[in-house]
Image (tube, rainbow, N blue to C red; front, top):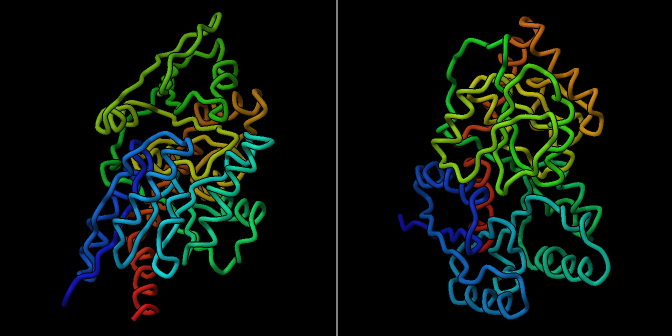
Length: 328
């Protein structure tokens, strides 16, 4: 049997999206129907010239199935609408921009690529609802397929350090809520570890460990070393630290808003991300109540079963096979 080629289209550089889909390739190919190739766009910048050159580039790389894995949605304009899939991770730019910039983003990253795709996949119902809110995309064209948890995140039992728990927080962009986290934990006897991309300013009477440029294995080690994963973000397309923390067997505290509640299931303590008292009281709750903490960990381990790579890969396989069947 001749295998069909799936072309995964990645941006010129990046980490999170690439890691998500690299996790799936083995389980997609195990099925035996498809072979996966990966191409990275040659131009990183989002100016008009780079956009045009990236579109021309994909026009020369067409395969039976072309899957835009995220971020550079506009390259869909260079693909055949009968066999292309567009994955949208979030619509954050529709909230962060205004005026002509918002209009251009809507046209080039949402309206036109969505219209030219056979199917649109997205990673949560929150993002699906945003797509429906901001575009005229038919609901039946959108398929929710969540992100998989990377198999490198494995259950690792540990003894909870109640005396001075180590709290792991991811990200230092505005929506990651780092300022509120630092303020909420002020004067608490905890060890706060923040993993981010750029240096943090100095906070008076606050101490934390700031780490950046970590390898995958170093990130896994930070999960293993921590007692609590604290992820009270106020905007996400999905929220990978939730299922990564659950997979390692750590208690997770996250926001009481979508998509965090959807992703975490019953396996997390939920807090109001806009209320420092709620964040602080949530941390106190999981520190002081061992029984509650252990229940959350058990529920988290049950929750991550639906995010295993083979489960998510099968959902994409079903979609790829549907496209092949329609194009025969």
